[in-house]
Length: 284
Image 1: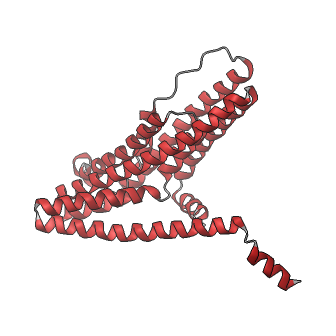
Image 2: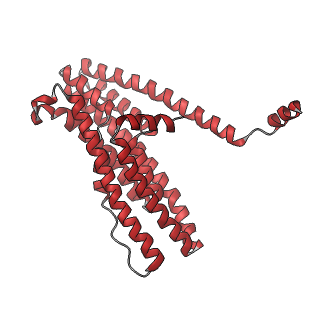
């Protein structure tokens, strides 16, 4: 009997196990590529810093762009918030792409402002940069939770309208620039290390070029992800319009759940230890 079971499992492999194995292999490959590209990015920073010529700068920009694209593929709180919103709320592909671009570029800009403006803001920033980064992360988490609360109110009104007042015109959608700013307040830790290192070596402009290139690559990758989610969701929305009123009610209910999910993510991000445990659990 045991031999028969083994032969059967060999002849008819479990599709879910095969899919999980392929998924694990894909992410293992992505992690390997990220590590190699990061080493190349660091090497390019060193070459640009000590050669001080156009070729070295162009090589740094290319390395930063490529690393940024792969940096966007990995898990992260900003991408989790974006995905939670776009999976559960209607958005055109153009609007979704704009949101992804704005969030990634805002993060790069705020990272540069946080590090380079630390001396001008307060003298204690120089010796307590870790504390400043933590404050910025907490500010981003609170802002994300507040945006989620606004989305909860709007989604609840949409659900109520779908159930009881379908003739009432929909409310104005949320300004996604505020959403992108809330995500962008969380500094990129790679960018923080790069800027601190280059600033200490007296080549701050090299750090700015590196972070700008990385932010541009990340923005491209995140925008592609957001656009893909929006296109996929638009297909399901089209099916729900054909399916009738109760499918639209279900979609509105999903929006409410997604908005609560964004609030929940914001609250989780306020606790760094809980964030680390949650990320480790999701990575399993």
